[in-house]
Each structure stands twice: as structure tokens, then as C-alpha cells.
Length: 131
Length: 120
Image (cartoon, rainbow over all chains, first blue to last red; front, side, top):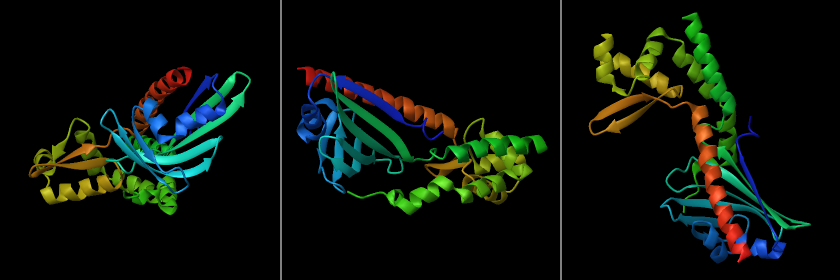
């Protein structure tokens, strides 16, 4: 269940991996495609703030940085601090150029505990039968 | 910037196993009156006073039951002016589907922008 509750997207481009790494990590370049103003300190424990063009801002913390290869951070909408998710960027050099993979998965929201939700549904139906 | 309390690893872990909340959910449902109140609230939000009128119960007793339902994660309270409205917590699995849909759409948009930038 947990595996299904995540977003995974990939983009294959002919650009070389350094160009892709710069485009996704340099705040100024990232702001050009992120649909928002990206500010972050690219080091584990560094903070991030993204002022979305749609009016939604997000805060977060950088977790891991492996230059040229991967980046991981956690973030949440600034006005809903309990909706934390983890984003992983991965870059691989492939025959066609570069593959950029993004994975985002929720860490802590009101509904991430799928077992608990299923149990509640079960408990509801079990009790209504016995009533 | 403030790091949310939930980001503390021990709390995230507790949030994921939730034995306490399951017990609370069971306790909340193990009562005929509470199941009736929950059923009534599934038609729309109501105040404790409105519920006490329809069920011929004291407001105090209704609030006690609503608190148990809220502890079990089944109802939520929302203040509107001087009144507090109680409503059924929306289906958690639906919320998950919405999150996936919304988050996926955002990444689709961002990646198509990125693709355009890298091509130019």
C-alpha cells in the first residue's frame, strides 16, 4: 500500500547530466521551471522556501545531496505543517542523454497511515453488523 | 522558519503505527448513541445543541459523545462565530487519492517546463 502512495515521474533529455543537475539545483535556474521562486541552501540540514506562483508557499529541509547524482528533501505547505512529504531527485546518464527521476511520497499526513484507515473502515462495518 | 513538530522522527513513527488512535476509534464506535450521532452527522455538520434537540439528550451528554468520536478521529469540530459545528472526517483514503492526483499534476507541469528549458 505504501509503495502505491507515491508519485514517480521521469524525464529523459538529450542534455548532459551536469546541465540537468545545474537546472534542478541552482536556485535561479530551478525557479525558471518550478512555477515558483526557489530559495534553498543545498546542504544536508539546509532550509528551503518556495514561493509558488499559484500563491502556495512551501518550506522544507534538505536531507541529502550527492552532487551530480541525487538530492533529497522534505517539504510541506507553509500553512499546513502536518502535510510533510519527501522528494527525491535522481540523475542518471543514459545512452540517450540524461534521465531525471522525481519521487514524492507523503511522510506524515492525516491519512498516510493506510492500515489505520483500513482498520477504521473495517471497525465501522464490523460494528454496524453487530448493532 | 519553524520546523514542524511532526518532523521529529519519533513522532512520525508514532504517527505511522497509531495503536492509540485505533483503540480510540474502537472505543468511539462501541456505543450505540455515538453510532447514531455519527450517522446523523454524515448528513451534514451540526452543533451540539442541534444534536441534543434532535436526540432528546442533554447538550453536555452530546458533547461528551462528540469528544469521544473526535478522539477516535471520526468527527471534527470547527468554530464558526460563537458556534461549534461537528462534522464527519472525510474518508481518509479519498484524501490520499486527491493528494496523489494533485501532486502528480504539479510534477507533470514542472517537468514539462524543465524539458522546454533544457531544450532551449
